[in-house]
Length: 214
Ligand SMILES: O=C(NC/C=C/[C@H]1OC[C@H](O)[C@@H]1O)c1cc([N+](=O)[O-])cc(O)c1O
Ligand SMILES: [Mg+2]
Image (cartoon, rainbow, N blue to C red; front, top):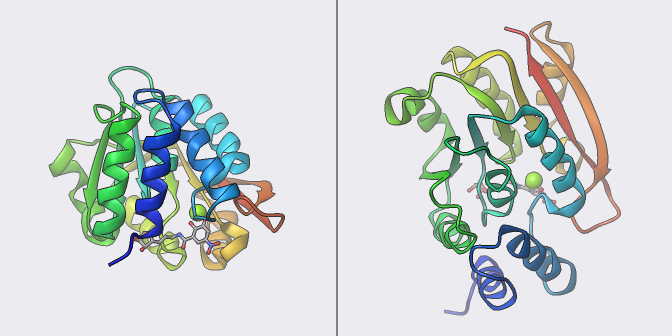
């Protein structure tokens, strides 16, 4: 059984970055994806937009849907204030196993709770599992056809408060048309599009930032 792309990405992190240095982990993954093998991380260009939103929101409690190899998990967690928590949900056990090691290599394991399982089942358990009252920031980057259902589930579970920010990746490519239509037309959100490119390519993509109005 040969190695998988996530396993090769992890090896590149361990070889080309410094343990405990999140920025070097981010750079090593971006280098691997640009020069060796493309992978579906949010990437450096959209990652800078993500950084800006994380810094602006300065979340005490953040949620990420779709961990993959942990690239955006590291980007977010490295900016979190002391005492704050990032919960990240990943359905695929092989991805979760790699992400756990990437997060630990970056030295951010104390700020991150990585939970394996389907987001639709886990979101309703956030309060009881982690004592979460509400999320200040949600980064949505998992299955594109789950964005809308999970945003509505977060509302129904009372996990969003006035001012909570949803930031969604890939709203153009691969695209999340029904989610976009919802957040842009619902009176419960103030939505804005950040134009960018699909990670490591020239194709258009972007992030949609939607503030929940309560
Ligand atoms: O499917 C994408 N992400 C969803 C990830 C799906 C997988 O991770 C969560 C779940 O375990 C699933 O197996 C994606 C796809 C592209 N793409 O260009 O195909 C670009 C991106 O940024 C993406 O987040
Ligand atoms: Mg993505």
